[in-house]
Length: 632
Figure: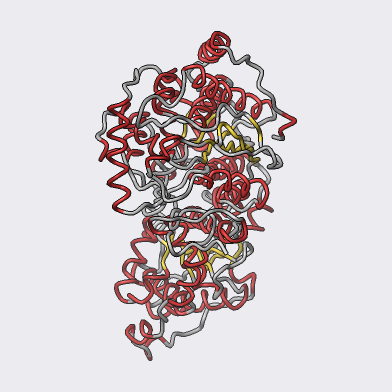
């Protein structure tokens, strides 16, 4: 929303603020189950339950129950709440405090932060709000001015703010949520920016969940061992200096919080009051959710978790809120990173639900799931496998280009974020650099899924899901049928030549690998099926392609291949459970498509972000980023 679209409605006196908070709490009721039954019933009727779709069913159930908008892909709104913290003066951060202002300018002028990249990825509108930056910000175009004060007080010495200021922050968040919902959003993605805010959040989680400072305190922006030890001692002093009532969210905020955390607390309350839902990001949004739950325990029904962050306190936070993470990407960053990615899971499941209800979707299926023969591929008549040993084939697979990996890593480290904070998305980016031969592969990087089929064509039952997942990931599924009675040698050659054909025909550096049925359904036999997968893996790895694995059956077959072809291992992208904690067992390329969606997120980071030098943001003076990040 633009600054002209929003102004605070509630007077700033304590009585008015308390009344607004109570009125909001009074509106919050447990989510309705009507939409839930409608949407999940579609999957059940089509024969897909938890055994096939795992936690994806929980996600779509929660979405439908909360919003009452079954069959509609949610309109999203990212709210980046920004403020500074007085505890910065204790020396707990790797970055100078002016980084908060620099990043706000980056969001709105350079548009080169992780928040920008992943808002683009999930197609979310993004609003940036000044709740209390400790520097003048009036000249930044598009910034929403909701400033309460120029940062909080130092919580190592006493309360962060007054109760009135805490209420102001919460009510601001409530009214931000109301404004976004009025514009049509029913999925809110709160994020934050505020140097030293993980110190505040660690103290909040320690107080509410009963953790020690050691258990609650993490590296934040990847600080050094020495600074981490110091940060733990600062959190210990904070907890000694402040004794909030942990059953009163406003009191917790007043003693330990930040203005941006208070606004996120209000956003959660406002969303719940108006039947929208909130996807939590990492530690900071989790701390805000704890404060919102202390205000009104019913809000937990309106929350969806996204990922398990690298900060140690987040696990306890999610357990307290009775939420389970759906990803483990090892992020060390807020800015709605994990929640933006998680929101795509909802898009995929709504698209799948709609696909199952469409009566005339044969054309859509035929445009997305195609036999490889449609590209003029023909099965090889005979195999030359006997002339080569597996050792020879393994020796033909090149090692990943280490110089290219290092160049890509240096580029990633100099994008406007803490070094290595994007965890496994950065690992994916390094793989993509090797596969594409470019340290910054383009957003349009071609990708495809190769699916071995047990019958002449792709499994009809799964087809609507395959289409929905593939289209949302921007890919197509190409099928190859494995004939009955083929020898393992011929099957190996089929897998090998199918991949080499796809690579040459479509110039794809990214290949999903899948089956359309369980291995027992393949009449060619288990040995031949395993050989076909080995041939595909060998061929893709020989061309340095990123190989995105599908469900557990494909993982098992690929593990067998990797025993004989260890040189292929660096090219394998394991989606479950390494990246996604979804327990999806359905075959047909669904999990590969989810992995390709993660690849798209990594590509947005590589292409949409700006470097510290380009954006003029201050670099780290401690930890992993010190000495690597360059401002010029």
